[in-house]
Amino acid sequence: MKGRFKFEGKGGEFFSLILIQGLLTVITLGIYYSWALVKIDKYLMDNLTLDGKKFEFKGEGGEFFSLLIVQVLLTVITFGIYSPWAIVRIVGYIAEKTELDGEAFAFDADGASLFSLLIIQYLLTCITLGIYGPWAAIKIYRYYAGHVSYKGVHFEFGGDGAQYFSLLIVQVLLITVTLGIYTPWALVKIYSYLYSELSYEGEKFGFDGTGGELFSIILKGVVLSAITLGIYLAWYEMELMSYICGHVSIGESSAAV
Image (cartoon, rainbow, N blue to C red):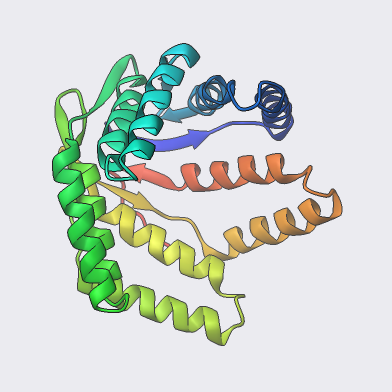
């Protein structure tokens, strides 16, 4: 696994897709929702490549519906306690149905360990009035990455809570001082840090997008979405995905500006 990601989804195609899926979901009072999600995932994966190698999502609406309904019911019946087990089942299904160059991913986490992790991180974040949040986030990122594998090899996430805390504090301060204008640059800094801590078989990921480019995309997207009463959102989402994916690589040196 090495190279650069590329996303080629089109706004017009995505608009038609989400319009039809949204209507079918409304008409069926939500029952069609699982099929809609599968179709959207298929479209997104069909338009994503890594160094020319194609991604593919092979999930089926009926399968996902059966899985989702059981997980939702168990989560409701247990007043949310079952949610970590539900997350593991759902993420596991999505991973095993997602392929890159004909090889499926896998997610081998278990509900009990995720439950313990989330409870501890939540309590520590509450006790510290949110200060521990960055450390909690890093531990959760590491857990998820460490349980995802491709061709039998697990991903790895380094990351350090103190570094992430310092990064977030600076970015939040700059966003506040600039009345939000700095947000795209802050996002690029955060993306760059998180991707740089992710690796596969010793090859590090990287993000080399720039704040200026992201600012232009966001400004254009917000203005046109407002003018078109939300219709442009489909094009905006595709442009954002193209920007993010196009600046993510593995095994290449990257630097955000």
